[in-house]
Image 1 (cartoon, helix red, strand yellow):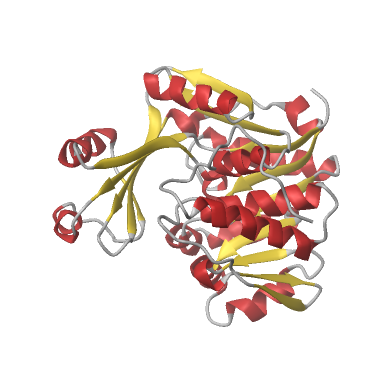
Image 2 (image 1 turned 180 degrees about the vertical axis):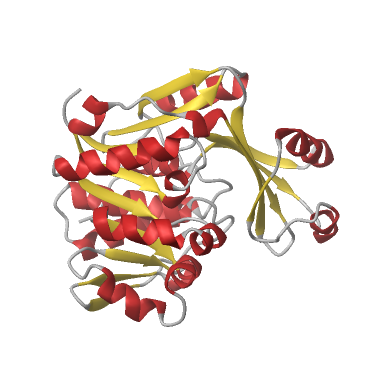
Length: 322
């Protein structure tokens, strides 16, 4: 395989979005706005409670979402992960083909990961998750890494308890030796706070591009996060996602503000992944760090105007206005 722009490692899941009342969250003892991990039996119980309230079902995972956005812009992306030998695994695999993403999936006996997103009347999303067999991914795809320009992963994959975490670290080391760009996205503020002793050293050693939102930045750096971010690795672009407040780019000790575009926001799920996809596409095509941020902003705007993380009309190329 030659000329792959982006190669990503992730933990495949199927996302299920459903409406829920505040009382349901209290009954389930969920931490609102966070990702709550459960055994699969508990997840099945939650699914039985929301039957009839499901709004959307779509393949998920931050890295997969980034690949979809990258592909929609015309880039060549490949995704590696492990899915189960169940209908969800087949659904995930067929979606990669539909989105034009090169598949490096492995199948394993068991269940594909699943995340239930409970959307309360205030628009807040609370996640109930079970990663299934996705943490068991262990077989390196050396040619895929060698023939790509950028390697992407999230802090969640890096900090998983299964073999996929070891694989992520092997890829980081190999990418550095082979001179590949490494893009890391910090995800899940509670996890970032708990595992910052692992995440920060990896960022300092490997990252050439970094993404996070304000909550995740505070989790990693504490008070005065933005000032500390400027000193992290001044030579690499650090993108701070701020939702309706747009984004900020920290580079060479300077801060650049990128305004959000106007949009009729329906669901913010996947907006950060779309932003990262647009940025990485721009960087892979020779755009400046700031120009790439504007591409990311454009793509994120398309995602928030629908339910779920998928790119609208992902099978067609999204054109960038110069």
